[in-house]
Length: 103
Image 1 (tube, helix red, strand yellow):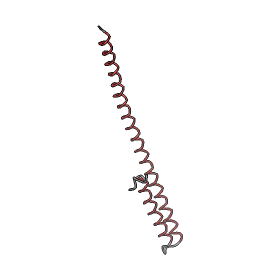
Image 2: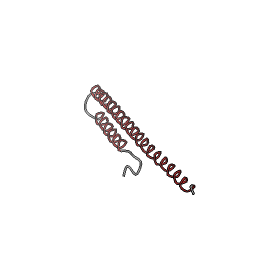
Image 3: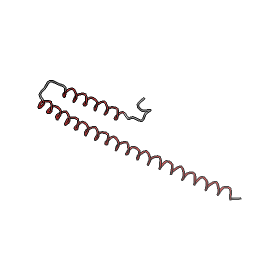
Image 4: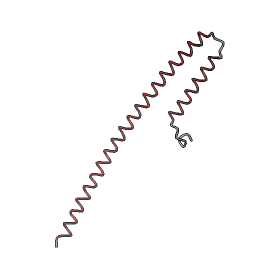
């Protein structure tokens, strides 16, 4: 269903992760710990989230680069097949012209 609306799996996963982080932050804000301890936890959580986000973005970039490279390879393969087919068609047409033009 999410694919029908244009959401990618990565966007949905990121939404869940961000929701979890937000919930965790709110839980810590309302926890009975001291302000200093809560700020330390929030700082640690923010650093972890930043690291996870960086890792996820690097993974997505790598996957996109791989997909682009595969697309280029497929394009080159199809281009060479089409070029060979056009060349074969030209040769066949030339042979047929020669056959028809000789009495």
